[in-house]
Length: 413
Image 1: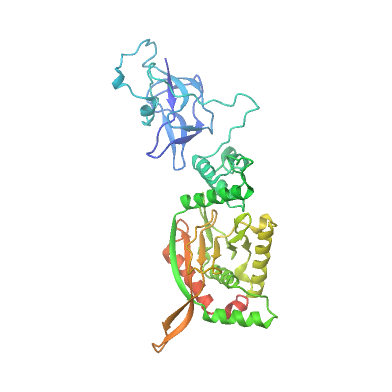
Image 2: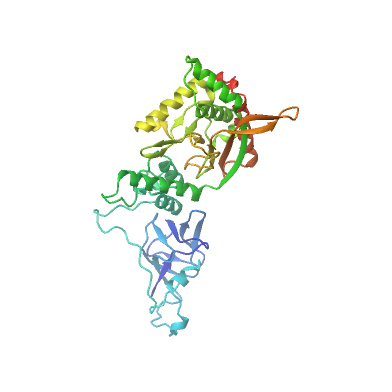
């Protein structure tokens, strides 16, 4: 009697796994301890061994197949059961279900004939069916939660397998590649975009371990300088966002360890001073990037930022205008809010939330109260990339530059 080989449960939270590779083929003899196949999850890869001697009778699941726990991957004939025609009767209350059997990683597992066996994993029946997509379980979950069509993603893993990093890169585009379940024609384009944005921020919040750092910057000198330059007329018109982008770019140059992102292979340093800018458009939130913000004087930064913001609102961004930036800024200072604690965008490692400057009294060097304008800075960080000390160094540098705005007028030393 052929006994099914099952996809084992290798952890409390495991629901599916990838049959990464077979070490045997139909007709092979196996001995106790022989490696039959390798199961890969988003955390580990396990070699599944034979618990007895026997013969592999059938291979059902293909390499790269993603299967639920308990699914049949193949069949074998156990030498200890060869020739056995009957099984002892088992009372209904003592019968184990296939799901219960699948909870045990030891395989092969004998499933008595009176128990309904799990369905076999089948290859596509015809060339008209959709081809099998090879992807890790984590990548599939990220794509599903993010509303991304995994069929449109080019995998960078073995045999073109789609990895979590590939999904993150696809999600980092201004608009998702595709929504898995397209909205019906009656749903407006705005509603579809809202769903895409919702899926994107859900993916970010679920997969990025956030922590937060806060500071207050005295921006009275900055606001005075901005007013003077804007009234002059010979300088590009400046906004607080321009100062923020310039200061963050300079801070990346001073704290280069912060200019990094998390990938499937670990922390990846970017080696740039690029800063993303959250822009609200008719199509939803988009984050174009001001390139080399830390390597330019303030007037150049303002022109670069204005250019990508304007093209974002027109829907005229190119692929080079988005992605590959470790940090972004979201400034809601045009509204009467004192601060914002934002969600990090997929593919980035930090985002600075900024509200409207607030008048507060602070003691001067003589202990006398002085009225000044303070800007609340809320930095959301990816704990896989940075820790509290590194984030504090970065935010302290940003704060210092905002409080000494004249240093931003010149190019970096």
